[in-house]
Amino acid sequence: MTRRTIRIAMNGVTGRMGYRQHLVRSILALREQGGLDLGDGEVLWPEPVLVGRREHALRALAQRHGLTEWSTDLDAVLADERTEVYFDAQVTAARPDALKRAVAAGKHVYTEKPTASGTAGALELARLARDAGVKHGVVQDKLFLPGLLKLKRLIDGGFFGRILSVRGEFGYWVFEGDWQEAQRPSWNYRAEDGGGIAVDMFPHWEYVLHELFGPVTSVTAQVATHLPERWDEHGKPYAATADDAAYGIFTLAGPDGPVTAQINSSWTVRVHRDELVEFQVDGTHGSAVAGLRGCRAQHRSATPKPVWNPDLPATGSFRDQWQEIPDNADFDNGFKAQWELFLRHVVRDEPYRWDLLAGARGVQLAELGLRSSAEGRRLDVPELSL
Ligand SMILES: NC(=O)c1ccc[n+]([C@@H]2O[C@H](COP(=O)([O-])OP(=O)(O)OC[C@H]3O[C@@H](n4cnc5c(N)ncnc54)[C@H](O)[C@@H]3O)[C@@H](O)[C@H]2O)c1
Image 1 (cartoon, helix red, strand yellow):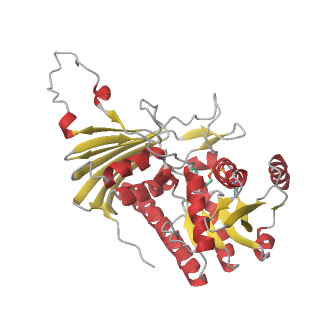
Image 2 (cartoon, protein in one colour):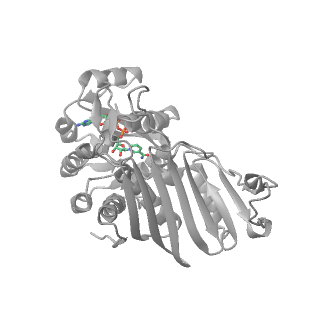
Image 3 (cartoon, helix red, strand yellow):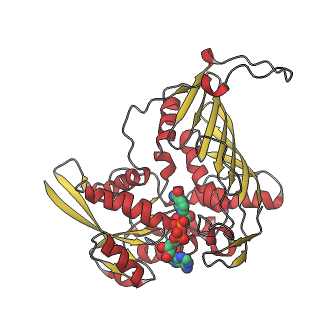
């Protein structure tokens, strides 16, 4: 077995996503398992270079995990010809500029979503990467969730018949920050810093809906800023200028005709569900409810026949009438699973469709959702091309 090292500049690893999911659960997890076995006698060994703005934070992080390389000088890391991949998990507003610099330096790029703050910027990035001939990928982690993988299995197995509709419920209460600390960074609640739940979640819904049911062809959305004031990391009050809830209706071009999808996204909702996100899919032959990990289904032959009568109490638990879908597989962390596919794409040229153009579709859906809300009308979602 030979070992090939791949040097990855990782920017934004002091943040929530960059640290936990990308550094610890993906890259360091790959090292703990001995590297990525490419299956042909070679093992890929990821060598992260931690990049960021605060030297002391990077040094502490590197020391905690036994890493030797960190830098506050992105351009120097990009100028180093040993660096092959640039990864970005910075705040959204800082991303496009850094990605452009990496592409200009000839690096392959892998990035968190959203890729830019608007469709034009997201498409520009995709064109720049194409013209530079570098490989590019965008995180679409929800596709690798066990619950959604089981839902996909039901779809591929023909369980639903003709799919009619999808209803998604995402969210939880994000504390205001005064009497209890907020559990998400404050920039998420300031539009001027790239915040807002539509910008954050619609890119996810775009690829989930697209990959499972069909491309999104129209959007109707209503967004709201339910809590106009919050308290930041230093306990200081600030004006929450970004939307903290987005109520969306999407038309999808399914293989058997249009599908209606409705998704509520909210940071101002208290959870009365089994998981933080759940999708119910109803089809002519069966229905399913999928969450992050679980998935339950009900076939038409096992569907009860409730009769509406408010004078009588419900006789049984509707939830108990669903069947749990078995795992039938070991599910790895979704971020790590996607990293592995991207790295194989880089070093073995294996196909990879979650690229910057796919990322631009997510940005477009967020942009059109916000416009739909502002203008109070349904908008078509045009197909993007480079
Ligand atoms: N895939 C997902 O499920 C998912 C979930 C949450 C967030 N995200 C995305 O990941 C990115 C990071 O989100 P997060 O929640 O980790 O944020 P965070 O605030 O915890 O981390 C932000 C990172 O960016 C760095 N940074 C660079 N320039 C900055 C600036 N000018 N101001 C503040 N920080 C700056 C910070 O040092 C930090 O390392 C966002 O683009 C977000 O949309 C993705």
